[in-house]
Length: 381
Length: 92
Ligand SMILES: Cc1cc2nc3c(=O)[nH]c(=O)nc-3n(C[C@H](O)[C@H](O)[C@H](O)COP(=O)(O)OP(=O)(O)OC[C@H]3O[C@@H](n4cnc5c(N)ncnc54)[C@H](O)[C@@H]3O)c2cc1C
Image (cartoon, rainbow over the protein chains, first blue to last red):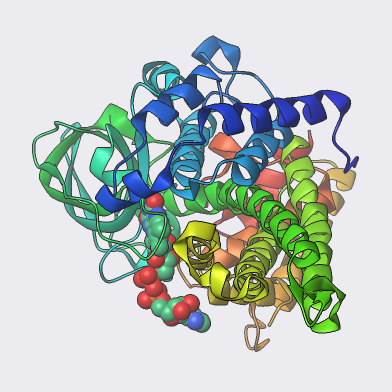
């Protein structure tokens, strides 16, 4: 397995870094105040084919491998300060991957071109008010009635939910069965009777990300909107997590690289007691730890992408990747604020925003505690 | 069609390999010694949503097969017997 970027991938990353600096360098404060979604930036990313990357060309995709897709997210995480936008883009791609790998030909043709062009916003709805970590103990039901499913229940914390045109909803289709076999996935469209989206929830960070509750009140969904087979929901969830726990950390690692660069520059420029603060070991140690975690993170991230590109299973690696990189990012942001002292605490320096954003990374896509549990299960304990 | 001796031998070996994996990796307290070929692994909770992840990894690695898309249905992993049939079919 080659864990190096090709020259083409390196050039693509540089291109996206330049694109982000030029086109996505908007003033975040205006968006933050109103918790607004950056539609113009979304459209620009769609034009750059970022949303389309891993999908076959016949569906309007870019036809590139998972490694290249991951590099794109990494470049955005590095050069775009709007982590909310980057998360929304990752969610769009992840929904597409579920449709690509499990959808019928009809679903692929209907949705993938719209998803690739960014014309429709996609969301995936698993979490419920009463079940998050224990996601498969969900209660939303999909009851079969002739050639339809009747969907009832509610979902919460759904990324892109409030602006979604299409939602992949996980629901219990057979309450008699265990979660493995009893859960199915339905593709629900905005405007279907009985489907209601709520206003975005106020959050600690990721301010532009539109995240909220969805309600299903006897929503009638045609049988052909079933994603995969009936009862395949838990397995689709597991498979999806392998991509998700590589793709989201790719962006986080990009952010970590930016944080490290900013911190190193500051540690060289800022003087205290007549010396650059970087010359003090307790400051330098924070920087060397960031660098160490960045390089180690790269290793596990590239490994996950290579496994997926080689059509290999990456559940354990993806959990390690997600846990290690999200926790490293949170620590890097905390340390960066500390290195910047009072300035780090002020909004103007923008590091405090990265810190607030980074905390979510240890919660979504399975909390850090859950990743530890998964890794432990792989150890047979 | 009647299976020849070689085929039956290899099938037995496959089942045994799967059984050993389940006993050592998926059943923590080792209490389930009566793990017959037809015990319903999912319904009885021996394989849950975590367990299926390591089982799939094991099957792919051990039998050099790829499991994706339509293959990933719970029915294929319902018992040692169905897993073994599935592995044989994928190995052809
Ligand atoms: C920004 C953001 C975006 C999100 N996007 C989506 C989305 O698009 N779609 C979606 O479906 N969901 C989404 N979520 C929801 C997210 O997946 C859940 O918040 C997460 O899985 C945790 O669930 P919970 O919030 O219910 O916490 P709980 O499950 O209630 O956990 C609370 C605490 O208990 C700990 N805990 C729980 N069980 C165990 C255990 N067995 N062992 C050790 N510790 C345990 C947890 O680690 C956590 O610290 C998003 C969340 C956030 C913050």
